[in-house]
Amino acid sequence: MTLRPSRELIRSRPVAALASVCSVAALAAPAPAIAEGASSGSGGGIAKPTVVLVHGAFADASGWDGVVERLQRDGYPVIAPANPLRGLASDSAYIAGVLKSVKGPVILAGHSYGGAVIGEAAAGNRNVKALVYISAFMPDKGETLGALGAKFRGSRLNPALRQVPFQNGDGTTGTDLYIKPDKFHQVFAADLAASTAAQMSATQRPISASAFTEKADAAAWKTIPSWFLVATKDRAIAPDLERFEAKRAGSHTIEVNSSHVAMISHPGTVTSLILDAIRTEASGTPSLATTGGNASATGLIGVVAIVAGVGLIVAVRRHQARGR
Image 1 (cartoon, one colour):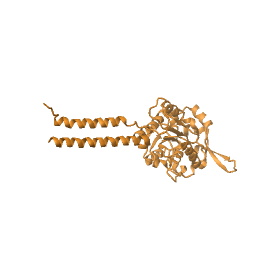
Image 2: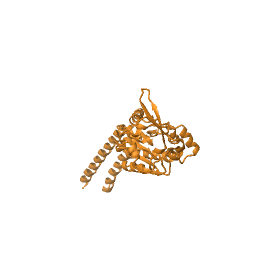
Image 3: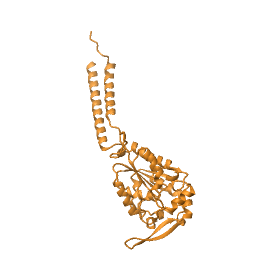
Image 4: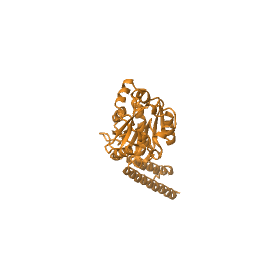
């Protein structure tokens, strides 16, 4: 006697086959990489973006030390370049050059005046996947930092500034701005030890006064996703200004009970915000989640799976028609 499989079994076999094809396609698809061309750990794994940290006025790159240490511990390549502090246009051009030297995707963070710099330096750079602002200026195109800083009350910076004239090699002159030593702790770093603030005051790097009167030439936060840390005890930039900027840009925002230098007093929180930007962009932005090569391979496998699935369905229907 010849046994024929039941129609229920006939129906089930193509379904199982289709599931098998889909499973194979899923297994064959390459794992999404965070960055194309970025360095990866010694054991292979997922490539990681480079984190570039830009300091602001009255400071240097050492203010990022606690954040750099944590990011490097997690395997991220980090660069904390020297911000010249000579003017918004020239500083932005300098940092833009640093960014162009980095291969693969970049997560770009700026503190204080550094926020204004990254908003201009990142414009037109497709490798910059996220902007992170730490108690920072975040001007729109055409705005000056002086006018932006005057929008809200809460800053005690202006009365605390000391003006020092300087002369350039070509004979032109300008004015450098320093924070007065007796005001530095209160205005800039109130949640740090007084001895630490005194050392920072003695080694502070001045900013040219012209940086506060130059108009921003670009606002990269309009096209690049942004994250913002509002320092609620900030006396250098008004916390309400920081909230205004973050809301205007649609930034992912957190508030921290911190002075102006949150990256020094709360390095773990700042690092977590940067990592949140990395994870969010890795999971939600195609240009960061997959490389061009991976995207092509995944697309091809998807097409094969669909074609195979359609072929199986057609075969099932024909087999069923014959059995009727």
